[in-house]
Image 1 (cartoon, rainbow, N blue to C red):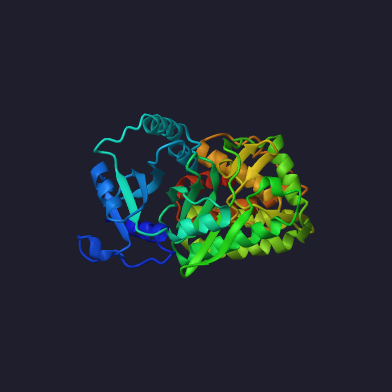
Image 2 (cartoon, helix red, strand yellow):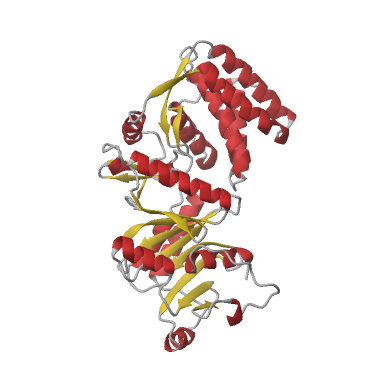
Length: 403
């Protein structure tokens, strides 16, 4: 068993405590509490035997891409939850959408041959997460789908919670590292604060439960619409951002913004090559001159405003994943981020990247966003980092005249 799978099982089946993985290659009954059993690629007979032995609670998952390198755990329960579990994975790239279509067809046909990687988690007693769901929602027999983020210092496990008939009750975030725990606590705090504004409530998750969990943190929040959000900034995006910007509008001087970004950039420079350092220096020099005397509109920003963090619903845009939110940042940075992420990860051309207003400070704010988000990418170590960095480098060169 991989260390990643071991950690996932302990966070899902336990109370958040991450016990060390057993040494060696053997993994048996003595490595687990008596109330819990794990089975890989179990037969129907094995499941029945466990039930007869008193392991009444059982969750069986299709584990992709493999048991050694898990990323998604789709429930293999009967009924609508089998298909609803796929809602935890909403790809935007064309190739990934095709793969999801094949997976949807496979689960619909119940194709579960011997080569399909399956994991069974069986317990004599109700799992702590099941207890929490019952207390918060009243659902006594929840079904779960799991998603693991990339294996970085901010790694977390996201659990989609459903009723047996497929209705999504919400999402639970379980951090797998201390750094991820801080982000989960921060997201819970900002969602609770934003929930105090009635105009925002139809557009953001509601916190069902948050707090300490087995020495770490937990956030249980409501779900939203199922229809994917737009890949272009449209009327729904504009309406949502106007509501968000109205929560706590403020301003800061261009000089203050420049100093914050310059400080962050100088800390990141040692990780960058000479080409990047030259671009950064030119961008800072340009922004410092253009922002002299300017006032920058600021307020609450999402911080990772992008298509994959939105859904389209009857009340307009629904926006989740508020881990990067800030209570006082340049409001235009959400627009810059949306366009940059679409350009970097979906290969769609920015519709306005070359037309930001020089005299209002908009263009220099854009330059500072590109530098700040580059620092964020360097800190994240995500799987999309290289694509994101290359896109930002090209955008900086365009803005600075091909330097």
